[in-house]
Image 1 (cartoon, rainbow, N blue to C red):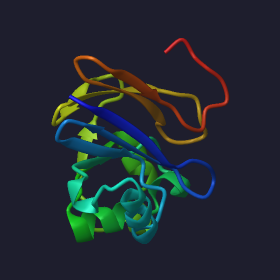
Image 2 (cartoon, helix red, strand yellow):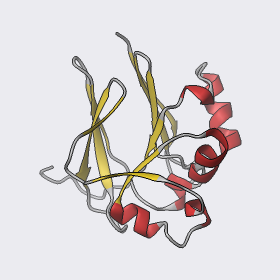
Image 3 (cartoon, one colour):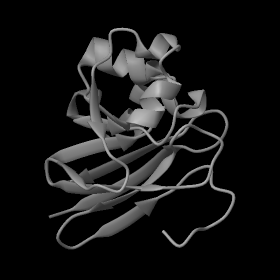
Image 4 (cartoon, rainbow, N blue to C red):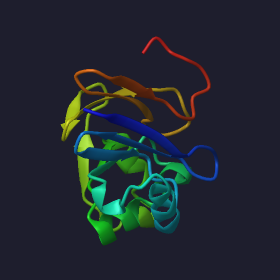
Length: 151
C-alpha cells in the first residue's frame, strides 16, 4: 500500500495538505481557492473528484477559503470540531454546509486512514493538529503553532 503526502500550500496565502493511502485521499485544510486547488492537485496528477474529505484545523481564512465550494459544488465531506464550526458560523463559507463533527482528542476514520485530532495553541476557537495513520505509517500535521506542547 502506498502513502503519499504533498503540501499544496503553506503560509498566509493558503494552507492545504494532500494525503493518500491506497484508495483514500483527503485534504488537511482548504485554504486555496477551488481553481488553485484543482491546479495544484493536477500538478501531482490528482483529480478533485478523488478527494473524499477535508479535515479543518481551525477557522482562519488561510485554512478555509475553499471549503464552501469544495463541499457545495463537489460534494466533498467536511470534518471539524465544534469550536471551529462555531468560529465559521458567521462566515459565508458556512452557508449550506453540513459538517462531520469530531471531538478533539477522539480518533475517527476516513476510508483507510485513522485520524487523531489533538489540541494546539493558536488564536482560534478550538485549533487542532492531526496525526494521520495507516497500519504502517504515522504522520503528524501541525500548522500555525508558536510552540510545541506535550501533545
